[in-house]
Length: 92
Image 1: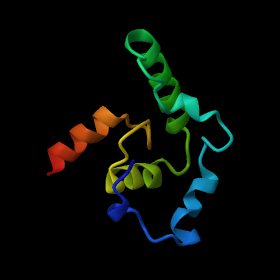
Image 2: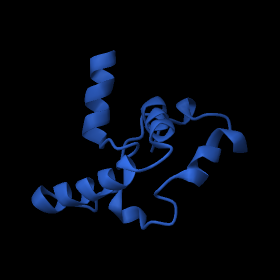
Image 3: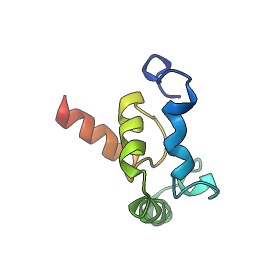
């Protein structure tokens, strides 16, 4: 779970960018790894998620959200959890 203390205020305007996401209406399984998923299957799923993110009009808002709250799972803003962790370490 994301760090609750880092979540923005529960105000609708804070989350309105999500209405414009390319992922809206897409099966969330594309963005989140099932238990024990490894290797080529995981890379293929992550590539599919990133392809959707690449054409998303709110990719930057999504990425900013994931980095701010330190989303611990899934692909957000075109970045996997490992990529987000790496980015956070580099900017720390």
